[in-house]
Amino acid sequence: MFRGPKLVQDDPENYMFVWEYSDTWGRAELQVLVGKKDRWTEASFPGDWDRLTRIPPVWLERAEELARVHFKLAAMRLSFDPRRFRGPKLVEEDDLNYVFQWEYVDAQGAVKLRLSLDKYSEETAVEWEGDLDRLRRVPCSSW
Image 1 (cartoon, rainbow, N blue to C red):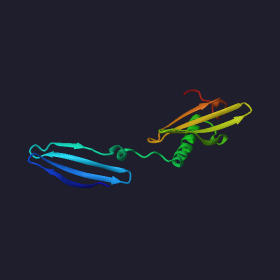
Image 2 (tube, helix red, strand yellow):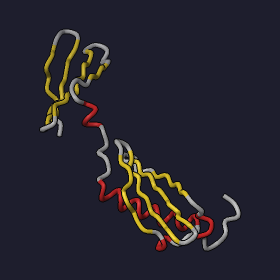
Image 3 (tube, helix red, strand yellow):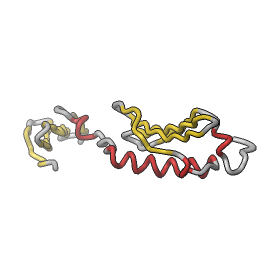
Image 4 (tube, rainbow, N blue to C red):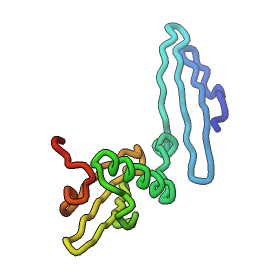
């Protein structure tokens, strides 16, 4: 939580107010300069302001939960039975994404479906490898 405002400058032309924020990871300030005559304002943000404005990433458990939901939605949209697939398995993780994989294997081959989930926006992208058409319940006539 921010503390302030605190008047730190009162000269003939300007006022300067400061709001302060600090926690165990750092400190940030919001400084606002206000002109006495024409009421113009100027703001500055010294300190680790980016850390305060960043959205925290999705935790792995929540990401897996979201991936399961989006996998089922993809199954409905692409018309295949999601119960035939094994997964999800986390196959890749970087600073921005989690990538989960589901796999179906039979005598005719393997079908892998990958779902990428953005850690910050929770947007997803689905891609697959193998012959997904043979697993469809209803043939897909158009994309």
